[in-house]
Length: 115
Length: 112
Image 1 (cartoon, rainbow over the protein chains, first blue to last red):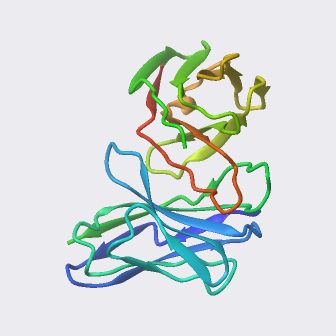
Image 2 (cartoon, chains in turn orange, blue):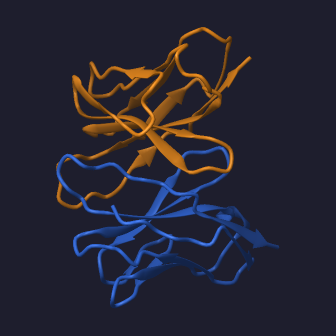
């Protein structure tokens, strides 16, 4: 079955360490996105990519980095510059470039905790 | 993208229809209305979307007012598994602008 896989489901990081969250999709979607969700809050866009080797900052990109070397993969690195990284991270993908956008497919999320 | 307003929480009895309202009074002519839901600690799930006509699929119905300033998501026979946060989003499907902006949504609780 096609879908988006995020790993790991739970991740613990020590302060000052970088950590990379994995996101892989086999839907042949062009666009991929990373969102952050804090307790009781909506989703905030970190980065998005519409095509391989290209990506744009979202609303809260500071302290994060991404790469898009393959269509299927969009890893997110949470760097030590991110002051409050503890959150639930969601990856999504969508078809890009069609007049009718039928929405996003989301992964099941990675819960990152800084200890 | 137009801003949406949703009640923060609602309850509905199991087996009854759940009607979730959304106000989008500043919606533009080319903006669609999307609904997603998020069950606790999972990724949001696409439910339905529409432009101006009412829409129905296997999950829900979407009723959009004639002036398009508000809409209602209807879950016809709510079950306990429909307990979730429901997000109403409006946006135009422009090339190169596929971003969706999620607010805080409506927390729907289905009561046994």
